[in-house]
Image (tube, rainbow, N blue to C red):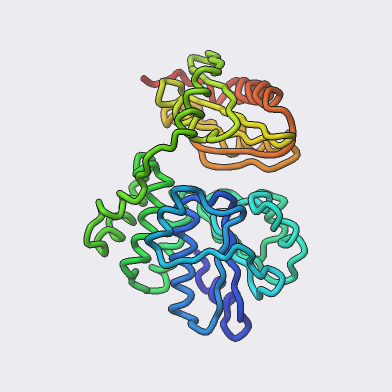
Length: 338
C-alpha cells in the first residue's frame, strides 16, 4: 500500500474539506471503513473537516450499526467545495446515483479505496487507487493503513472494522488466513467480541420474508455442467432472495428486480462453484450484465450485482447465455467437487 502517496494527497496544508462517499444502500463494510478512516484522519489532522455520505442512504443493517458508531452521515455532501473526494467500497461512480455527475465534473484529486477492481470508466477519473483484490473487505484495507502508520486502533475503530470484515466474509466463512490474522489482532482490542458481532443480527422484516418466498415460488432451475443454477424475479430484496436460493440447494442464483425501466440484478454462488469453475461473478457475469443494461456491474467472486435500464426477463435470459459461455471455457470444465 502506498501510504506515503495517500498522506501526500491528503496533505492538511492543502486540504480543508474531505468528502467520503459510499455506494448506495451502503453495507457495514462501507460504513465501517468510512468511520475508521475518518477517525484515523481526524487523529492525524484534526483541523481538516470530513464529511461522510452514502448515496441514497445506508442499508437497514448499517442504520442499526450507526446507532452504535459515533458517525453521522451527511445527506447532502458538499462535493463541489471539497478539496479531496474519497470513494470507499465504490468501484464505479454509477453506485453513487445522482452524485455521479458531480464526480465527473470534480476538478480536485479523487482517492479510491476498495477491494473490488475499479471499473475502467471510473478508473479514468481517479487520481490514486488503493485496492487489493485479495482483501476480504475495504475494512481490511483500512486496517492495513492503520498498521503502516503505526497507529493502534481505538475500541470504536476496532468495532467498526470487525463488523465490516465479518459482514463481507459472511461471518468469516470466506475469510483467508490473512484475514483471520487481521481479525485476531482487531479482536484483541475488544473486551467482548460476541457483543460486537451481535450487531450484525437483525430480525428479518416481513417484506424480506415475502420476497424470499416469492423468489422461491418463481424460480427457474437449470442444470448446467452438473451445476444447479436458479433464476428468479422479485421487486425488492434481490440479494437476500439470491442467498435464500443458495441455502435451498442451488450452486448459483441470479435474482432480478424491475421498477419501471430500471433493473437490479443480484448474483450469488457457493464457494465450491467458484473453486471448481473459477468463474468470478463480478468479472465474468456482473460486469457484462452492467454493460448490457447500459449501467454498471461488479462485485466479488461469489457475490456480485448489476443495475441499469432494461427488462428483467431479458436480463435473466442473457445471464443464462453468459453462464453457459463461461462454463464452456477450458478453465471451467472441472467436475463439481462434492
